Image 1 (cartoon, rainbow, N blue to C red):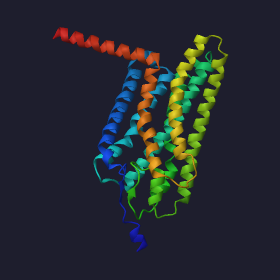
Image 2: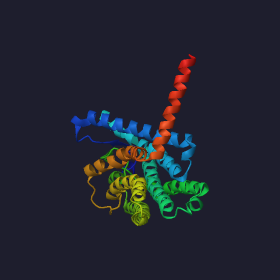
Image 3: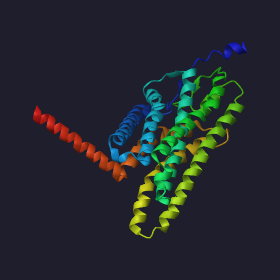
Image 4: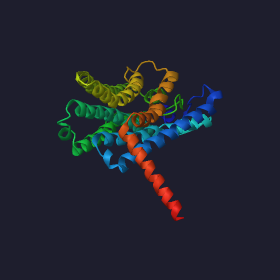
Length: 319
């Protein structure tokens, strides 16, 4: 009978933000607008980096990688979030849930590593400007990019494999809008101690190590900025890194709160609210910060618009 019960759950039901039924439509419109803006903003950055030859440098190659990552990172969770705002019953198969878990944490780990790499790139550019072309050549930049993706997708592989062997015998309601680790563990009738310990260890190692490397880079940058004799030089250099540091603060602040902790009590309401920041808000904030605070990207965007206007006027004259 026990074995039979353990095979009864073949799908899960997302609860989403069902605790606020009167706000469902408002939440749907809000999340949809942010999601579409995020897709458009990140796609635009990728297009500009690819089309403008002046942006074919390590800094903007990493930025293009980050924008490409953000598109898939938010797409891994937001569609189900939107569905939970419109429908009372939104389901996902057990295998689909595990797949979502893997891709969400793979992309999240990739972002952590990529942010650390971007901080290291800025450290070399500001603290070692004469050796920067040698230390961060195009070949090395591409290796860092590939390594970030490879490391991110390897990190959660073993915990995902162990989760696939768990038994789920009810209840089948996930008190979340995506297949996060804690909600999955709560639904399992197997012993989850090993997979929980391994999962939290992996997430803590990836998050904390990349965070410490990132902050170490920015620490050296701050020291270098302070030593600059010219106030104008200090202002320009700090402005270049301020946008990066803003992204780092928002992203790491939320994921450290969510995942760098022992597998103890978990408040699902707070967890869902915090998840909105790194699943929905951060992928939109990244392109906004990098474009609004970056003169090179704004210049390339103006060139793109001017070229489009020229081609449009030319086609209208020919017509």
